[in-house]
Length: 219
Image (cartoon, rainbow, N blue to C red):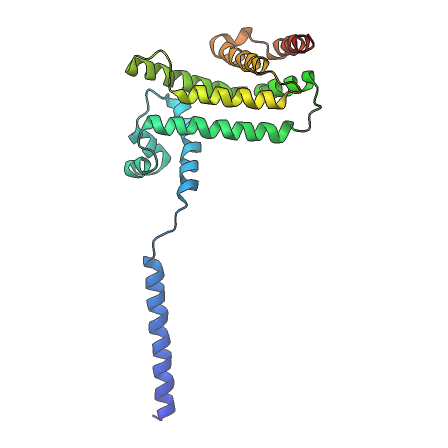
């Protein structure tokens, strides 16, 4: 066997060793996980579980099992069930605001059209907002039973302030009291859907409310 043949064989063998080593090294490399994206994914999936089972009934162990992660992984992202739910409330609020503004930004800037756009958005997603309300009521009841406080977590007050500001900015008038009135009316419609849906006519009540707001804003 010639010197050249032996050299070629050694070179081929060396390449094989390098390739095998690289494959093993790559397989041992830890997976790069986007923590923020994983957290958002878990929150999005958790909403249906809170709505289906109830905030007071579901545990972190059950959440982890149904979300397909270990309990330790879930605690890595959220220190408690309460912290997870409150983060969900914040995330959904931001998401709902963004979706609404992206759809309703081209509505004519008169008071009737803008108020109607807000009510139409809620009506189109009434099942989703009703589920939100049911889970939030469950959480508030659990919070009050545990803490003996008349008010629930301040996050809900913060969310209300943010929603009032968004409504106020969206309307062609600067009147936070009217914006708060609109939010309270929406909450009332949703509660009506929960307690006696057969008596809640969204379309009729919404039109009456639009007319009332238009009349108030003209005074």
